[in-house]
Amino acid sequence: MNDGRRKGLFVAAVVVLAVLGIYLTTLGDGSGEVGTAGPVPGSTRTVTAPPVAVPSQVATTPSADFDVYSYLPLSRDQLGAAADLARRFTAAYGTYSYDDAVGRAERLKGFTTVEFGDDITRTVTSPAAVEHDTADQIVSKGTARLKSIRDMSANSVVVVVEGSAEITALSGAKNQVEDYAVTVVQVGADWRVYDLQLAGSGQDGDVTP
Image (cartoon, rainbow, N blue to C red; front, side, top):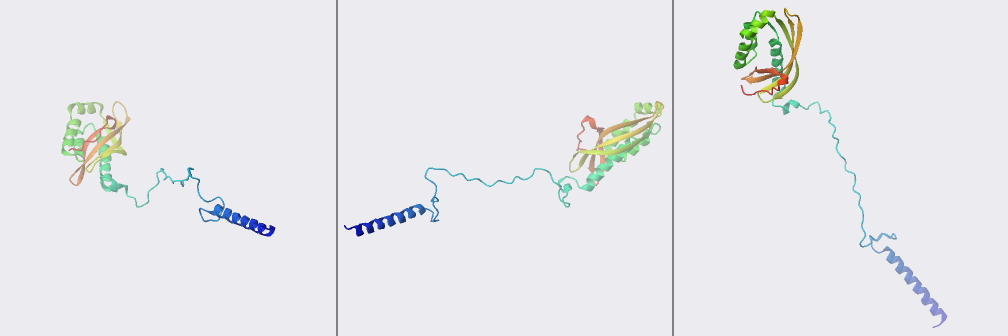
């Protein structure tokens, strides 16, 4: 083989090897970029998930058309009527005079169920109560304000009422303040006081008249 033919074969071999090298480096993803043919077998690839938005747990003010009373067993008007009755009854309970026990009982019965009215009458007109009030000539002026609602159902509300009584007596004037749990029940279309207890006694409200 002469020198010219040997040189031609050498050049042809170099060209073939160059083309083959370029082809091998681009094989796999067709992108034409070196080193992007894919992961090496046996290797792992970590994928980072996008952050998840966590909703806020802070309470927000509901819209103006949100009606909380639709979730309660009583309407706004019913609840207002029951609570106001408890307030007026407590004020009346703290208003009396030593010389009018029977009149006091009759006024209180205007707020109550029949059964509770009878209980109150026996209490305020008992000989012991009348003798005590008469001996000291007690005269009391009561007021009341609502403090909270302790419990409610479809026909019963237990209202905590602060009752204040300005008392004048032979033993001296004083102001007496007590928190009462007043149970109000629905009787027909009306509301009536069913029970009165000191709030600290744990009265939960008996809903069975």
